[in-house]
Amino acid sequence: MYRTIIEAFVHHATCTPNKICIVDEEKEYTYSNAFERLKGIVSLLREKKVRKGETIVVECTQDADYLLLSLACQWMGAIFVPIENRMNEERAKEIVCEVDAKILCTKSIRTGLDCEWIMEDLEVADCMDDVEIDFVDEDGVAEILFTTGTTGVAKGIVLSNKNNTAIAQNIIYGTKMEKDSVELIPLPLSHSHGLRSCYANLYNGSSIIISKGIFNINWIFAAIEKYKVSAIDLSPNAAQLMLKLAKGTFEKYVDQIKFIQIGTASLDEQLKERLCQTFYKSRLYNFYGSTESGRTCVLEFNKTKGKKNCVGLPAINAKFNITNEHKERIESDPEHLGYIAVSGKMNMIGYLHDSNLTERTLIGEYLYSNDLGYIDQDGYVYVVGRADDVINYKGIKIMPEEIEKPALLYSGIQDCACIAIDDSVCGQVPILFVQVDGQNVVDKVKMTDFLRGKLEISRMPKDIITIEKIPRASNGKLLRRKLREEF
Image 1 (cartoon, one colour):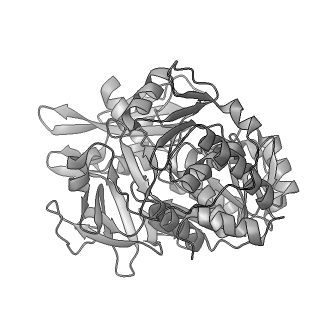
Image 2 (tube, rainbow, N blue to C red):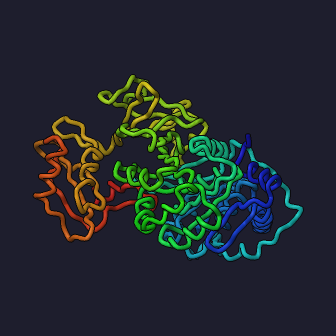
Image 3 (tube, rainbow, N blue to C red):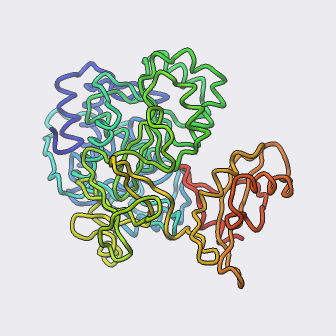
């Protein structure tokens, strides 16, 4: 077993130099080519006097060089901080200051800061044969990942090399990834899910195909054909869009695609069924986890049907407990929910510049979440919702998902979200926001009649409001906070 992602990568570059390592929409690297390119980037960083422990903020360009730059940071013991492509300049400046960055490596963001370094400089990075390999401490800081701020202000999450290795193992063992796996990854590598899938493949010695998104569907299918893609990494939104754009083309590759892994957000039953029908010969996985503790549970949902709200069995490095509000372990079941806590090597170091939040979240070996759920007698973990999303209607606790899931079954509903608003009589009442496909507004009377056949009276939304688009982060997570702020 390797201690770090970079240690595994160098091993594979030595043992399987001619194997495809990374392909993007412009370049193709074997492990040997990628290793030489990596040494050139390391040389360039050393010319800029980057030292161990210093921080580099990098705009995501969704290509091989971006990924190799993250490996170069690991090689040198520098701290990699990814930010979104074309991020708002003021937000980019805030992050640079917050992490005290040595360099802001960017292609399109112009901040005017002295530390700004244009990404095109990487093109002149020359390989130097005398670059020393100095594998960093597995407990050393590898990355700072900023959350999308779905439940409040975005937080900086500090992760070690050991965290990244444990998450890679969770993915590899969870998907039964083979050495000859070739995985298509169209998800943004500025966020944890896509980046961690790349690390898993590099740790495993597999091959990565990076797409800039789902919309270049012709390039995607050309890559699936040329490189014999055997796995795909998707979010629920990306999966829906890809199935729509593919127009049945996946039928040609049912024997080729060995597995599909999905994460970043909850997966509704309709989409599960569509994926099961389309990829009826593939292994289909849904991962549960967070930026703070990645890929902690995995469900092979095409073989585990009828388990509502189930997120699967604990990953190889994860152990789960259900606790009360005092963080004491409890026995749980569907009628007795508790807070989900997880222990394992994938748990973060802590929150950047927020020791109080770190101390409340990380206690002993466990990371405590706001997710409510239970564990059944077979060890399967169930997530019913988030404690801060619970709607308290006359003392009845209602999860927004209880209303959203049947609402999605109504004809013409493309997306929806439920939030609570204060009510003088009931305490709180649910309001349902809907995004309608091909219509201006939904017929409230007809949809209300439909929902009455699916929901108890206490769970009926007080109002149904049509909006242009349900707010979601780029990784597909629902932004309930934004709905609360706006409405």
